[in-house]
Image (cartoon, rainbow, N blue to C red; front, side, top):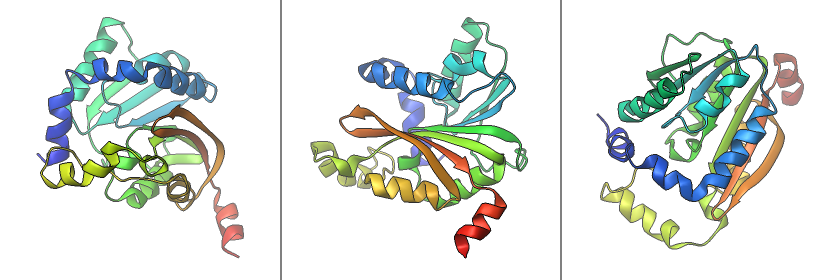
Length: 217
């Protein structure tokens, strides 16, 4: 088990309580996401955590495959879904590189508060692109720590070095946009849903092959 998985396993029991501090951010993310969902959609949620958003949008889609590398997070998310008798979510401890996921099999892929935790974000974006159907949507919410001076941003490198915190990338907004667009996506919606630190909700559409060719000319 790697350090990141251990970190999130330990925090699974308290995650929801701490998330309440940013409750309005989650409410906004849920509202914005629902605008892009249909009852026929098959959705993959990458890093679903304790299912805060997963369980709220399940009634708007056909099915959700909710994955997380933390088994403890998955346990909490599944328990909450069972309590609400939600039956169209398939929770699974997994990375996004699981070979059982077929190419072009999802209408939407959701990734809330995970892109800044990836050491190789570009590789993940390439995989997300492969798994989406032509014209599919990638919806994410990501904090951009470099947009604001804070004590946390100063101490994070030290916390990561001693193993207290997992890997965290301090994005500027432009870095985040570049990561997404360089993965062959067109950003069609962007909004800050939290001011401190700035947290950007982004909807991006998978670029068709013909568009990719045109862009390279």
